[in-house]
Image 1 (tube, one colour):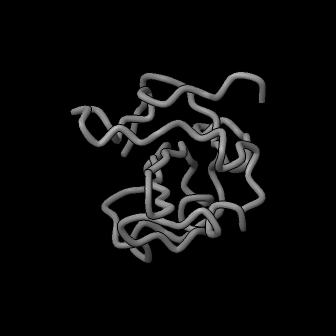
Image 2 (image 1 turned 90 degrees about the vertical axis):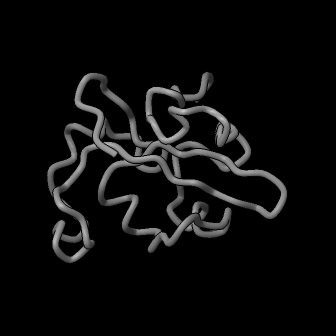
Amino acid sequence: MDNATARHRCFACGRFTDEVTEGGPTPEEAGQWERWVTGVLDIVDGKKCRAAVVCWPCFWKTDPDMWISPAQWDALQPRVPYAQLPLFDHTAPDGEDPNHYPWPQGI
Protein backbone atom coordinates (compact mmCIF):
# COMPACT_ATOMS: atom_id res chain seq x y z
CA MET A 1 0.00 0.00 0.00
CA ASP A 2 3.00 2.29 0.17
CA ASN A 3 3.52 4.98 -2.42
CA ALA A 4 6.69 6.91 -1.70
CA THR A 5 6.82 8.88 -4.96
CA ALA A 6 3.81 11.16 -4.49
CA ARG A 7 2.27 13.10 -1.62
CA HIS A 8 -1.30 12.37 -0.67
CA ARG A 9 -3.76 13.92 1.75
CA CYS A 10 -5.78 11.62 3.96
CA PHE A 11 -9.45 11.92 2.97
CA ALA A 12 -10.37 11.38 6.64
CA CYS A 13 -8.12 13.71 8.66
CA GLY A 14 -6.84 15.95 5.84
CA ARG A 15 -3.16 15.62 6.80
CA PHE A 16 -0.45 14.72 4.32
CA THR A 17 0.02 11.00 4.85
CA ASP A 18 3.83 11.20 4.80
CA GLU A 19 3.71 13.61 7.76
CA VAL A 20 1.66 11.24 9.96
CA THR A 21 4.26 9.41 11.99
CA GLU A 22 2.36 8.60 15.19
CA GLY A 23 -0.86 6.78 15.99
CA GLY A 24 -2.47 3.51 15.07
CA PRO A 25 -1.22 0.04 15.86
CA THR A 26 2.32 -1.16 15.38
CA PRO A 27 2.86 -3.14 12.17
CA GLU A 28 3.06 -6.32 14.23
CA GLU A 29 -0.27 -5.58 15.95
CA ALA A 30 -1.84 -4.90 12.55
CA GLY A 31 -0.45 -8.07 10.98
CA GLN A 32 1.64 -6.06 8.50
CA TRP A 33 5.31 -6.32 7.55
CA GLU A 34 5.84 -2.59 7.87
CA ARG A 35 4.02 0.66 8.55
CA TRP A 36 2.96 1.92 5.14
CA VAL A 37 2.40 5.62 4.42
CA THR A 38 -0.73 5.75 2.24
CA GLY A 39 -3.57 3.27 1.79
CA VAL A 40 -6.89 3.06 -0.02
CA LEU A 41 -10.08 2.03 1.77
CA ASP A 42 -12.90 0.35 -0.14
CA ILE A 43 -16.23 1.73 1.13
CA VAL A 44 -19.30 -0.26 0.09
CA ASP A 45 -22.93 0.81 0.42
CA GLY A 46 -24.44 -2.28 -1.21
CA LYS A 47 -24.73 -0.74 -4.68
CA LYS A 48 -21.39 0.87 -5.39
CA CYS A 49 -17.89 1.08 -3.97
CA ARG A 50 -16.10 4.31 -3.22
CA ALA A 51 -12.40 4.84 -2.53
CA ALA A 52 -10.79 6.85 0.24
CA VAL A 53 -7.08 7.60 0.42
CA VAL A 54 -6.06 7.35 4.07
CA CYS A 55 -3.12 7.52 6.45
CA TRP A 56 -2.12 4.61 8.70
CA PRO A 57 -3.96 5.76 11.88
CA CYS A 58 -7.20 6.61 10.07
CA PHE A 59 -7.15 3.29 8.22
CA TRP A 60 -6.96 1.32 11.45
CA LYS A 61 -9.57 3.48 13.24
CA THR A 62 -12.16 1.96 10.91
CA ASP A 63 -11.30 -1.62 11.98
CA PRO A 64 -11.34 -2.69 8.31
CA ASP A 65 -11.83 -6.18 6.98
CA MET A 66 -12.18 -6.42 3.20
CA TRP A 67 -14.11 -3.12 3.09
CA ILE A 68 -15.99 -0.72 5.36
CA SER A 69 -19.50 0.74 5.32
CA PRO A 70 -20.43 4.39 4.78
CA ALA A 71 -21.39 4.55 8.48
CA GLN A 72 -17.87 3.47 9.47
CA TRP A 73 -16.47 6.17 7.18
CA ASP A 74 -18.80 8.81 8.61
CA ALA A 75 -17.78 7.83 12.16
CA LEU A 76 -14.32 9.27 11.36
CA GLN A 77 -15.90 12.69 10.76
CA PRO A 78 -13.92 12.81 7.51
CA ARG A 79 -12.80 15.88 5.62
CA VAL A 80 -14.17 14.28 2.44
CA PRO A 81 -17.81 13.23 2.88
CA TYR A 82 -18.90 9.83 1.59
CA ALA A 83 -20.92 11.36 -1.28
CA GLN A 84 -17.81 13.14 -2.60
CA LEU A 85 -15.51 10.11 -2.54
CA PRO A 86 -14.47 8.87 -5.97
CA LEU A 87 -15.83 5.55 -7.21
CA PHE A 88 -13.47 2.65 -6.53
CA ASP A 89 -12.25 1.34 -9.87
CA HIS A 90 -12.09 -2.45 -9.51
CA THR A 91 -11.31 -2.86 -13.23
CA ALA A 92 -8.15 -0.76 -13.19
CA PRO A 93 -4.90 -2.63 -12.55
CA ASP A 94 -3.91 0.28 -10.31
CA GLY A 95 -7.28 0.39 -8.50
CA GLU A 96 -5.60 0.25 -5.09
CA ASP A 97 -2.95 2.83 -5.99
CA PRO A 98 -3.53 6.15 -4.17
CA ASN A 99 -2.40 8.00 -7.32
CA HIS A 100 -5.60 6.77 -8.96
CA TYR A 101 -7.71 8.88 -6.54
CA PRO A 102 -6.80 12.59 -6.37
CA TRP A 103 -8.07 14.91 -3.63
CA PRO A 104 -11.64 15.88 -4.61
CA GLN A 105 -12.08 19.40 -5.96
CA GLY A 106 -13.90 21.96 -3.84
CA ILE A 107 -12.87 20.56 -0.47
